[in-house]
Image 1 (tube, rainbow, N blue to C red):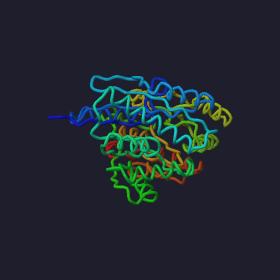
Image 2 (image 1 turned 120 degrees about the vertical axis):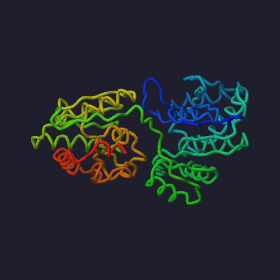
Image 3 (image 1 turned 180 degrees about the vertical axis):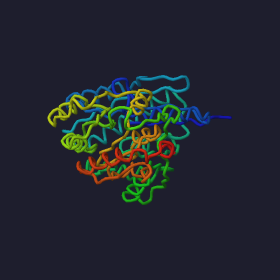
Length: 369
């Protein structure tokens, strides 16, 4: 049986420096390979900010050579990950940036065909950037493309021209996978013509196991995976810890993610740094071990498309306190945790205490299901 050739387009990928970033691309590619129904190749097109002069230099260098080169950044037994840099700069008007990116993509197509057979289908991770790229490549390769939408669909962060290209990609895609009910509703608002279906992210359940614990086993421990971005709501989470400490609640917190030093300083200003531990970008096995040393997962995000970390914690039997952020609330019921308003530190603190005081009411096996 001939296997379908699938070209995966990503604008982020799990690299040694930031192993958690874009990890879903690698995990889904491995899942497709293990299905033994297709051949996979991942093309990571990295739109990275560079000085204006550097952007022009790299662009004209490509024009003169009339060729590009892919770097292989990771290689597995059955597929490899190709990397190509597209330099960007905020000083450059976006309509010019889009024109330059289109020229880069022509060279990407030429180079890809030198090394590979044309794909039978293209899979783009997110409509913004990857979806635009997939739309262009599908015309060149004369094959359909699908999109798995991971992004928040916040079009006020992009130019009108780029936003229109994203909408066009949604319309032309053979299929658009939304991660949650909430995200599908957002997709339908921006593009009612998109042919969509809810397909959650892939999680390797074999990595995450339940380790039964009680409140008396060790200090009541709260874990959260985040990085210092306003959308993650870290300031409200840390402020809720300050409130707990001022009320005399005995607890410990674990923070996993990027930007650890910045978050440490924020906690130091609130007087709670010594009440927590900070971990930089753990792998899944290490993260599972930390979940099993915790009692509760807390998500303080203002917006979430899926909430992968919260679901991983639930596979370890942890109840969840989450803000009403869209993606995570699909999985949280009265039997698995509590939902509070976004940007409300007092509500977060009260929910944490409520779960601690009623901890035996949350059955780990029910939460895992």
